Length: 185
Length: 213
Image 1: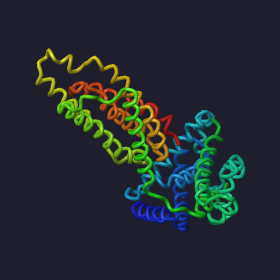
Image 2: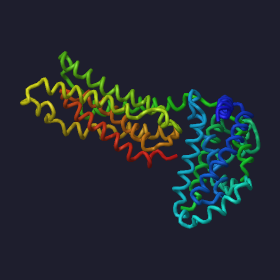
Image 3: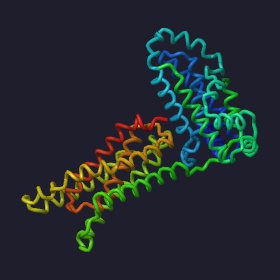
Image 4: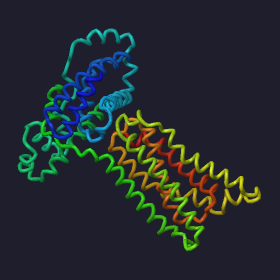
């Protein structure tokens, strides 16, 4: 935990400075921790572990879009854990109705499948993207999916660079909100 | 969607983050809240006109120290509680200190006065104006602060909401002090302290709904 905290915190700080490789490495490592955390928690309360990957992705988006709320003077793990837990509680509240549908006996069955690492979630990015306003959708498509630089995306979209950045940021938040809304309630 | 694809997406063109953004957003909301509250008091109620009197001036300064002290104190706490996991580090009980302090001062001032004066020291004719004005004036600062705090992604919404209400209530009380001519310490302790506490409770109650992100 000690070394993991130090390493994750250094990656986080580098990512905040704009180091994309460090940010990728951070998200990659966090995704593994998050998967173990969510599978464990969901199985403890008799929920399907298949929900875990959705939660992993929701938490990753939240960690990314809320990066500015991390105080570099504070430890990193409690910050990330607080977001992970918040997303779990939020998920459980939104899907309360289906809690009763899953019998407690199913828990053993679910844990039996835990070693099978399934990295595909039920989140359909293409469909969610289609719900976004065109400006946000194009900005994310260009900058995040096609790998254009912000300057190139600005030229292609005919808008300023800061408008591209704002659209990407708002678009990711909107995606995160759309994922929440799609859940059965 | 595969998690790896998501990570690819999120780590493409990573932007530099301004690490002061949260503090600045909250401080800006607080400053605008103070301005709005002061303008509201001066326009609708009017400032006090007796400030050439040294005792009135000293009383005003005393009230401002109390209310602004709570604003500053609560903003420091909010800077932590507004962020994810910020609720782990700071003992919220410390926020009771200003209230305990003014309560003690109020008791001292009552004990040093004849009991026949107690009623007029605690309940003036204008207590109802104070009780109505402070929560009403707090509404705009409350909304501004809630919106700023929500952007900092708090994870303990009741506590973050309570602190937000506390800041809004004490900002409002600061502005109201510019109008109010009731200067006895027990009056301030009970009616200012009480209405600020009321705003805090409202914030705690509304936090889980208003601060969800």
